[in-house]
Amino acid sequence: MLSNMLKGKLHMASVTHAELWYDGSCAIDSNLLDLAGLREFEQIDIYNVNNGERFTTYIIRGEAGSGIISMNGAAARKCQVGDRVIIATYAQYTEEELARHKPKLVYLNPDNTVERSTNTIPVQAA
Image (tube, rainbow, N blue to C red):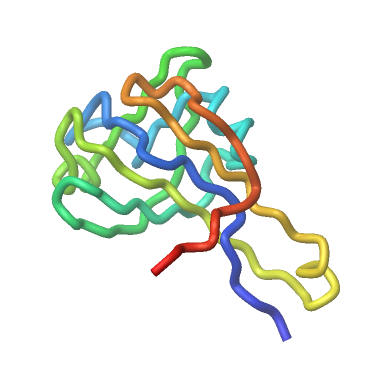
């Protein structure tokens, strides 16, 4: 049996561009992709914290060091520049792989610089 698990995420990224007529779907700064273990053309889910929109698209590589998070094509209808989003990708793992699986979690500041990265999420208290 395979389990579908969180592979990596960019938490609270700020949308820098919304390009309705640009080819591609979500351009992400190459440095952020590498840090979170994300790949060009990989399927991603995007959760817009500002308006509650949730949608699926794919990654295109953005200029390294630019901080770009650009929603392109139809995705541009789901976000506005300045919206904070969570970008997540998932993968399937066997029980054996799950024993050592650690997602790559990257937490971002409002300017898309890295606040911190980790592979755990604290237990939520009541």
